[in-house]
Length: 297
Image 1 (tube, rainbow, N blue to C red):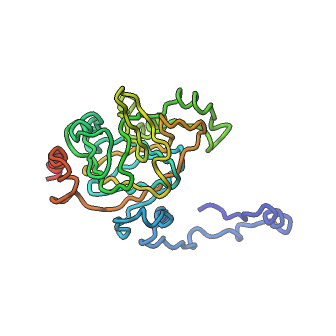
Image 2: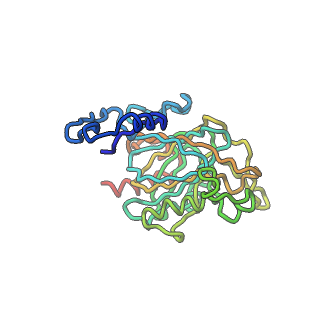
Image 3: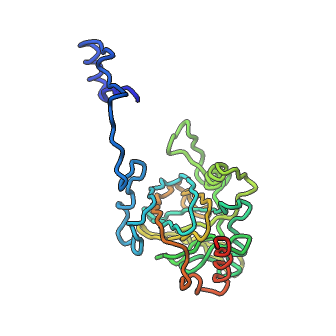
């Protein structure tokens, strides 16, 4: 147990000058009893989701919440998400971007495959009904809710070279939490926690961002695509390692480095039922979900 000290420096000075503290003034660690946090509100699971716009929680059973977070702009994190869980992602600022990659928690050599997912579903963007397929033809996650209708799988990641060219350079020793960190570096840090390296980094999905392609194959970034309060949800169809970065999109033309906050609410939604909308979206989706189901017989 740490020794309790007054938080105010003036009080600390007054205590020192008035009398010397003795061992009898300290709390007895053997007799001091601190109550455990209640099961309904554990100390390490603040209810950030209660601050999210109410409309962004539509369809979420908050009684089945696992945890919630607010991811600051330009930061990164990772989780091991079990089959039958979901994350509702909420853009807390307009113009948010959240880059994510996924790996099977059962076998990390299996991971999200962008070309197979797009080809099988005849699409160049993601929205409700689509699934994210692995390189083994299995559904890793499904888009079960979405009020935007377009999330980018093509625009890749902001790397250090492009970030320095666009925004200059700010190191942690000088700028602390206002430093610049690219999406690529953030994801490399996160997947490294699971023994994965640079060669394991796959093409990401960029939630809340829209990139279209013209007839000449040129990419166009849609400014002002997402607004504060927009949301999208992924249900995890297998046990996955999920890593995310809230750095700006690589194609965002804004000259200012101003990454946006994203809220996350994880909850138990259950595995995809037989009448799941994502199964019915395309025959390829039904096969991918069936292939995943076969892992959990």
